[in-house]
Length: 358
Image (cartoon, rainbow, N blue to C red; front, side, top):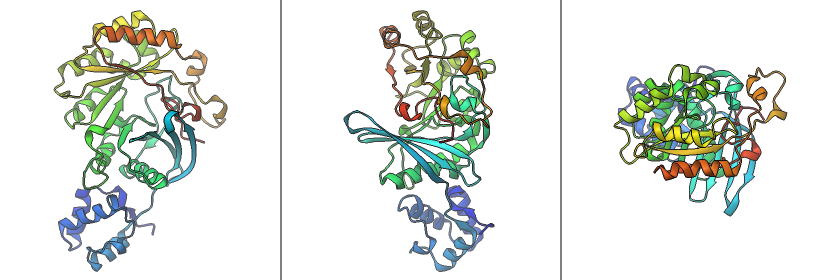
């Protein structure tokens, strides 16, 4: 068993090569993938249109081992909606978190792309807990499979807004997305998949033509402020983000979403809103304003090497009047602006709260 690999870690191309190299047909790979991701059959012997010799070969080389859900917390919302935060144990003992959000007909899963994060944004729990490793494509895909099977539902939307910077693990994220977005397999349309990034411009240029939705975590209206909370800004300053957006042929009917965490008395003034209006065009971007979410300070373990700076800064959430005024200023300039009240705040599953522990 130790020599076996998880079948979930193979792309269609890799499985095609395996089939060809083992005296089977290329199209058998498509059949196998459809059994796994469409029919949710996790037993090679039950794949009735696959020859017995190929099934035996698959059994010798692959298994269906996946990460496991070890804990969950539920938050009820209005109108019957709800959110569930899942703690998922990976096969090497590392842990990640995923958040399912029920909006009625829309079933959204917020997935992680890394265990931890290298970006060190000091308003974000994940960044303050440091980086462990990249997730494999299998571990990204497994989050969808596990939670669909757990809840007996079909995920309709996926957002890469969990733990980690997806563009810092782009090869595995792209490999996972091939299966997630294929109508024959998991089948979530590209227009219903959002990749959120802190703004790694060279990697953004690699994905801009793939037709996934793009969200950029901006969080400040000038470089002086952004440098204080997002170290990545020293490599990719706001001017680079502005240029990427203004030069892009990506948009079509999709505008880039600029995510902006509102921190009291830091980046929430009307002058900050005016600076944003000067930087961006309503034709190219829309804004998601996100009131700052506090850390789960009480449940931080002593063995975790955290960045103390955030706690020393003692960031607080902008009050409702201020963020409504901020929204109004942007809207009067022609921008689409949504105030995103993070779901799952009470279970520490909101924006900036994931840390990969119970």
